[in-house]
Every structure is written in C-alpha cells, then in structure tokens.
Image 1 (cartoon, rainbow, N blue to C red):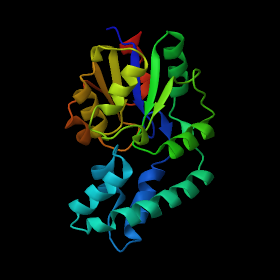
Image 2: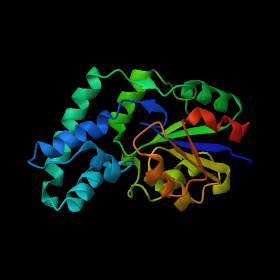
Image 3: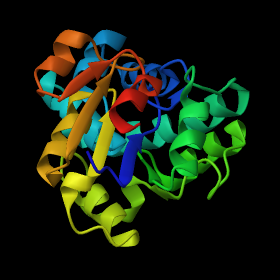
Length: 222
C-alpha cells in the first residue's frame, strides 16, 4: 500500500490530554442549567468542531440552541485555563511512530476540530516541532465546513500535491473522524481506542481497522 500522507486527529489519537476538552465542555453546558453526563458528551460531540458540537448536543437533549454561543464562549475560556495547568503528553509510542513515519519520507498532517489557538497550545506543551514531528496543522479555523466534511483532508492533500486520496491514511478516535476519511476517499481509515469513543461506537463508522493506539499502525505502513 502506497501511503504518502497521514492525516491524524490530535486529542485522543496522538495526544493524551485526559479528555479535558469533553470534561470542560460538559461543565460549560451544565453551568448553563443543563444536566448532561460526560458519556453523553463523548457520544454526541467527539471529533466535532466545538461550537457545532454544543449545538448538536443541545438539540439532542431538547435544550435551547440559542444558548450555543454563550456556552461556547464559556467553554473556550475554561479550556484555556484548564490547558494552562494540564500535563499533556503523547499517547504511548506515538512520538516514536511520528518520527519513524517522517524519516521514511511520508507527510504527517495533524487535524482537529479545535481552534488554531488551542491546537498550538497543545503542541507547545508537547514541544512538537513542525518538520520534525509533523508537516502541517489544519484546524477548524482553516475550513468552512467541519467534520465529517472532507475539507480538512482535501486541504492537506493540496498542501503536499497529493491528488489520489488512496495515498492518504486517516486516523482518529471518533466515528466522525472515520466518516471524514471515508468522505475524502482515503485509502485507509483507522480508528483508535486511545481516546473518546468505545469500540462499539467506532464500529458503526466501519473503519478499515480498529487499533489500541496509533503506534500499532506501523505494520500497515512498513
């Protein structure tokens, strides 16, 4: 298989941040007078651009979608504070995996439903460097349509002159990551169990493979 580009989700796929995003999102929604569980938030919101995730969640629980903007602003403020204090680390084996992939001449794009500001905050904490650990970062800020639209993957392909989506591997820890990969026509879609969703939730999106974590994808590439 001739994979030239890996498009990898961040939190839960390459980065272990202890689900702080979804914990913070749960708190932001509940601070507004709702009563949702973290499990519900993970089920509905995983992988989505976060304002859209809040709107979807409110629709799902019969809440008022007009609360979306205020909750999102509260969430963004709280998340910035949470990340300042958080011990962020790579998921086991992933940093070595990225370095091996890069040394083999393949391109690595990190993509995320976060804003650019939050994504860079994470990368700074990890001390991951462009052209060393990854080749580009594409966030929700860079596209007009968020996942499961394939827009972020298409942008990644354009950046590196790849015209055939069969040369692209997409990996993520949520069903919406897999849908994004399938919508782009990726050659391989990999779901990982190191993040937000369960095997049963991931299976619904029909990934090509479900792995415990991303470092296990080595056998697909090498």
